[in-house]
Length: 445
Image (cartoon, rainbow, N blue to C red):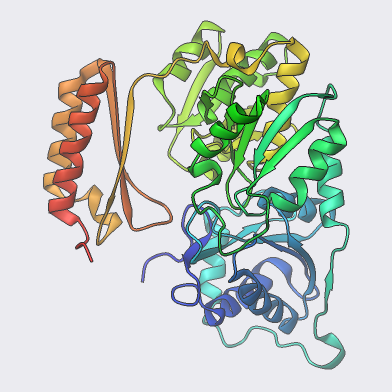
């Protein structure tokens, strides 16, 4: 069996891979490693239908060790991390983020709000099969209670990040039928904006289904239909956001990083004149940042690695092209709603439309494709795949980049080709997909 924890916690199909029995074992082990006797845990979840089932298993596990649980209910993953900090508790988010409805996951945050390092996750995994973990008896059994002010507390925090009230600004928000539903409307109303919510029913059967950050054309259409000033599309647990300007142009994580970095640097608020992003970020971001005297530091894919490097460098801004953006002066993890507020801050402080702010971050043609495989780890050792990657890199030289990597959460290999010429990028990506599919591809059912 491979490592249980991936790049973003534990993920799998609920009740198949991620069963209540497994969650119970993980919960008892986590309480032993992280909480000790009478440890405090905050648990929050997104709207997907399996969330209550897995929450019940996790609560039971923690209480069985004598731990105390604060149930936050349906709240964004960054809200869970925030509530863990404010309540000095280990925080656990039950969510599969942007994944399909059938999936779910568990993500742990230490009481300081940061994700657990690999060594601590390994310690939890090692403790799962121990038979000597504490079983509380009688008055020592842990209790669980509802955290009734969870939404209000988080909205207060995010609203406090606004520097200028966006009174009258017309904002479309796609909640993806997920964890943004209970917080987006009160947040933007509190700030004085005119909000146009879409996909805002907290429906766990429709979470991420043809909506949200993975389907940004939905929010794009809504912005144009309503003549809005800006649109924001969240994923299922609202830790990421994709923006849309008033003309309908998408502004992804790279665009958000670029415009926020330039604005912060101009006011002396960008620590070290550096932005941390991943190898997936577009060359156009690197070029735009360089024009403002800002260095782009790249890491492996995964917001946890971005955050680790940010902390090492003392950087204040980092993120991913997918819309995970971390403003480390304010938050300990990617936060889609906080990021949206920061984008609006730049708009309000400069008096510029989002289209003007994002214009300097030009995108080099970038082709992204996924291949479903039998073993995602095999991509690094398969000779045919590595030969094809090497040939593509030689062909592009300094005119582009090739990245072939396994997904951290799904049985997929992700292929990215970036080049000056879009046609060449498409051809090379198609060739790599074909080679990977023949070498290690999963059979079509």
